[in-house]
Image (tube, rainbow, N blue to C red):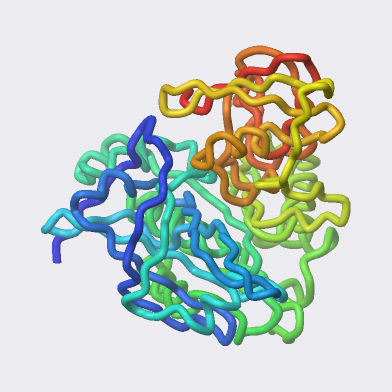
Amino acid sequence: MAVIRKPAAKNRRTSFHALAVKEVRRLTADAIEVGFEVPAELAGQFDYLPGQYVALRTTLPDADGEPKELRRSYSICAAPQSFPDGSSEIRVAIKKDLGGQFSTWANAELTVGDTLEVMSPMGAFTSRHHNVLTDLNHPEQLAAAQAGGSFVAIAAGSGITPVIAIARTLLESNPKTRFDLVYANKAAMDVMFLEELADLKDKYPARFALHHVLSREQRIAPVLSGRIDAEKLKLLLGAVLPVEQVDEWFLCGPFELVQLCRDTLAERGVPAERVRFELFTTGKPDQPQAQHGRPVVVDEADESFEVTFTLDGLKGSVKSPTHARETILNAALRVRPDVPFACAGGVCGTCRAKLVSGTVEMEENYALEPDELAKGYVLTCQSHPTSEKVTVDYDV
């Protein structure tokens, strides 16, 4: 079957589309890979770069039996491809989280033929070597355009999902590329994509180095046994990973591990622009509660902020009582239910908009890059108005 790799569409409006499940594959006892069929007429809406994610939306009964809309974001785990008939596919991995209603339901009940609403791919957890990942329609030009490079990823648990797509693409893009992967899990039975990682190792034995670190199983090498803490990370950086030779780092996993890696790499003199990271959750006990759809009563007599926003070329305006301390996202959703969001926790970046006028206070940010902040972008799920009038633009 012919494979045509495609770049992600630029300036694409993120929107949900109903996609049919074409495959559900068990990865571990508590994780599945789900493949969605993308028909030819929607292919352009689902072009993506390795490392990006999609949001899934469905309606499930809550604890009281009442229907409740749920949205969850999952990284795409396959390299971009399309088929001769113009159709394509999206593949994600869903790991069951303790108490996670969506992930528990998906692991237990999602089957082939079911339909879910899937948002167009988004996310900035992609390689800065853009010409490697955006010229994929012309693979014959890659070897001449690139001199290869050295890449390292440190992932834990389901953090492997975007990393495996990035590794596959970079290794395939140039015969001089080297990729080192440190993958942390509790035990061998918890390793997602075990066979796929072994296949990558067999295919690129001299260019792909795979280091499994198991916290609850003894490995032959002590440095690969136990939890990755500050001491073990320094050992890995000193004995296993070629720090000075690495062109780009990819970090994906729990907040504590990602932050430890970022701090340690900074101490080793690695420039921040060479470190790419993504969080699935912050894991912080003081994380602000996500606001999306919180009811707010507006009394004309109350002092209010005026929030104006542009979405799909249309302007909307809504008053937000100062005492309510609601986010811009929450306020906008009260008058436009199609305002884009996914995690609503400052992690995914789906609700990003440019601050055109006024001022805001952003409580958390784990999605926007420094250059985006410098250009005035904010996460509306975490931004509270601090001036009488605030204007944001989702279309920029």
